[in-house]
Structures are given as structure tokens and as C-alpha cells.
Length: 418
Length: 172
Image (cartoon, rainbow over all chains, first blue to last red; front, side, top):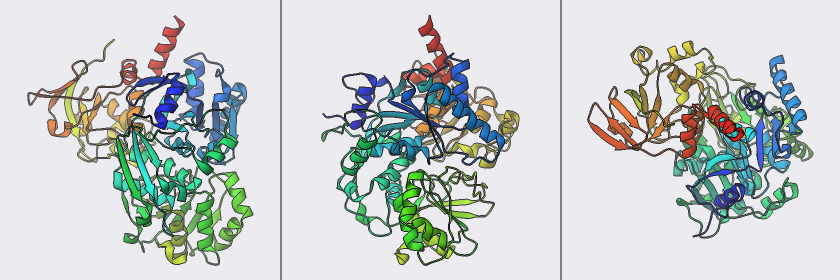
């Protein structure tokens, strides 16, 4: 019986010949990543010093810190947090990425998505590094383990394999593929396991699209998602890799706890109805519902293909009077390219509010909704209160649907504008 | 050191699967820091007299994929403040599980638990025997054993204690 890519990566990280799903091991992460956030990094930095007497991390090159939340700041207290983070990084010789974009995307751009690497973070959306054959796991507060000792405790997870076939029809995007997976497999289908994507359908998806899918793995219950690194994705990652590692792949006879087949050509645009990311429905059931706000951005979506589709839909058209459309490219690198391609000017002329990258739109810190308001969003989550008042609502959908809805002020099917 | 058995009444049974624990205090209250205030609000939408009826050592029973969504820490802090000693569910969402084990809060995965207990039954979780006894009904059932790292973390009262204990052992 062969091995999964996850078993291979964890065996190397644990310094063992081989490991199997179910083994409890201690593994050394190649990279330890975090963004600064009150109650997380500030607490780790303090605990390292006060509880463990650690003045400096032993191998600073293994650590990477991002400032992407509370950017720009709105209070002196927020700026205090960032100031402390900058100081800690300087004292420890740890790389700091500030104002470069949303960390999970920037992590790939700067080379933490090294194929074959094991990466930990506290935030589960780091799973998107799996696009490049990197095993990246969100450990919540347990990531403290990786700040105070070399290794983290982990039970080698089983893997659920999802094979994608065929190609998407116009108006259907990678975002729909993920939500379709949740609908078909269920929100607990991959609990404590790894969601591994494969199949010839991957060839028809962009690297960006696969990042959208792997980013959201947690809503299937998965610890993370991963894909065998091949083609354009492998080239992208190797050019930028921070570490020399041999890329590994799942063996053809690897042991999976379940294997599912999905025909991409059968998919329709979907919409995920509040208040849970498990509420997947066909977009057509909700067309016509009044919406006041639209968010195109986040670590899941907001990449070039998302901005491109919105620009094409909005070219020569206008955002409806009173509708608030926020377009936030996922990183500065993406924003700069969107500018060169003319998408930003098209969106600005259509009446979109286009802002430099920040996490803050996704969790209601800015562009906050009030009671009774409703948004269409490519953000990560639609739970109550996520983007403002607990009595506002979030409908998750693809970028094309956000753009089409912005024109009408109602949930709209993008295909008629394409 | 061994884990102390859990022994108490079933203070509530959540029937719904994929339960979002933020509902326990209500999303609008999630930022409240004061534990007395938070505890007074906990569970009021399910049972207005919950705080008055619950006793130290009581347990909560949940469905499949308990803790799904985007779990925050305050709801379970509030329940612990009221004396709730652990959660037994059909199954758990990994993010929630990690978060609460790291707080030193016992979590027990037990397929079939919802049909094994009624509200206010007196039950016992025997870690060593890996059995849950329903003392009221005179029945017992097994549960899914914890990973060694999870046991170590619960024994140490949570992540911080666990890591400190290890650091001290390495130093000595």
C-alpha cells in the first residue's frame, strides 16, 4: 500500500522512515507563521519570555509574521499591537511582511509554500498553501507549541481524496467548486482528515482557483487541503521556495478513507445562505433578493481571475445607486497586476470602492453592516455578526455574482452579463 | 497523574448537528470579557433558568460535528464558569476540539451519546475504563479514547501547563 503526500511530508518532518495515518508523532514544522492579532501573537510573545524564559527563537528563519489585520489602524491601541510585533520581529531576526497583502496569499508569494514543507499557523485558512504541495495546518492556540519548542504534537491524519473531472461552464468558478464539495460530501465529511484534490479537472482550474478551494478546507471539517504539486503550480512554488526540499506526491495506491468523483461540467453557480457555511444552495433560488453591500476580496477570493471577471461584468456599466461594492485585491502583487491590466480603472469608473489589501473587510472591522442589511460576499464566512451587526446577513458566492448583484442591487445571475 | 473521572448530570442536550457554539452566549455578546456577565447570558435562549439549575460537575451533550463554524472561546469560558466540567458529543469539529483541549476543558467523542442519555440523567465518564455510565438508567457505553497528547494536555490543565511541565522536565 502506498503513501499519501501528507504521510510523506510528516515522516520527513518527524525524522522518521515512514508514518501512517493514526500514528501520534512529534514533527518539526519547516515554517511557523502567524499574523499579529490581540490575544494571539502578543500573548505568545509575552508567554515565551515570562513563562518559558525564551528571549529569542532558536531558528528565526523558520518563522514568518504578517501584519494584515487592522491595516490601516483606527486606534492608537491597534498601532501599539503592530509596534510590539515589529519590535519582536526585529529583536528575533524574524521576517515581517507588513502591508504586502493578506498573509496567507503573501506566504505563497514569498516562498513559504515550499512543495513538501510542513507549515503551521494558528489560522486554518493557511490550508491554501496545499495548492503547492505544502502541508499547512491551522492549530489555533496550540501553535504556541511551535514558538516554545522545536516540534509540535500531531496525529497523522487520514486523507479524503476528491477527484475533479471536466471543466467548469461560464459563470461557474472555483469558489462554487468548494461549496459544491461541502454540499455533496457534507460539512463533517473530512473531520480531522486532509482533503486531497486530484483528477484531470485540476488542469482546467487556475492556480488561483485551487487556492480558493484549499483555503476553505476547514468547512468540510478538514485539518487542511493538499494537491500533488505539478505544472504551473509547481513552477510558481519552486521559483519562490524558501527552502530546498524534494517535492513529494501521493502514491497511486495511497490509502484513502474515502474517494469522491466530481464532474465540474455539472456545476451551477451556488450561494451559501446564512448563518452557516454548510448552507449551500443553487444561486437561482435566491436571484432577486435585495442586497445593500458586496464584498469581493479575502484570502479565499480576490485574486486576478476574480477581479478580472468583475471588471468584465462591470465594464461600461454602473454599480446601482446606494449599493456599496468593495473590491479588495488579496495582495499588493495582485493589485499591481490588476492595475496594469486596466481592471482597477474599469472598476473605479463603474463606481466600485477599490481598496488596498487588508483582512479588515472580511470580519466587519470596516465596511461594517448594520441591522437588517444584507451582503453578497466572497469572504470566508457567513456566520452571524461576521461583517457587522448580528442582525445583518451574508450570502457567500463567487466574484461574478458579487459584480452582477452590484449592478442590480439584488442577487443576480452573472451569466446574463457575460 | 491520571485524569479525574467526570461525574455529573446532563445539563443540556443539543439536538442539532454542526452546532455553532457562539450561539451559547449569542453572537452579539461574544466580545463581553466579564465572566459573571457572560455566564449570566449563557444558554438563556435555550433555557432561561439554566444558570440557576446547573451544578458544578454537570456536563453538556452535543450532536455531530459539534463546534462547527468559527468558534470563539468565550461561550465555553462562560459554561466553565457555571461549573460545566466537560462536553460529550457524537463528534467534534477539529478547530473547536483543539481550542477547548488547549484550555484544559475535557471533550469526549461518543457516537450514540444523544440516544444514551436524557437531560438531567446522572452520568460518569470513566477515562481508564473508556466507558460512560448512565447511573440514572443503569446503562453504559464506550467512547473514543483520547490521543496521548490530548490526555497530557488535559492532565496539565491545558496547553500552557502542558508545555511548561515539559520544559521543566527537560531542564531537570
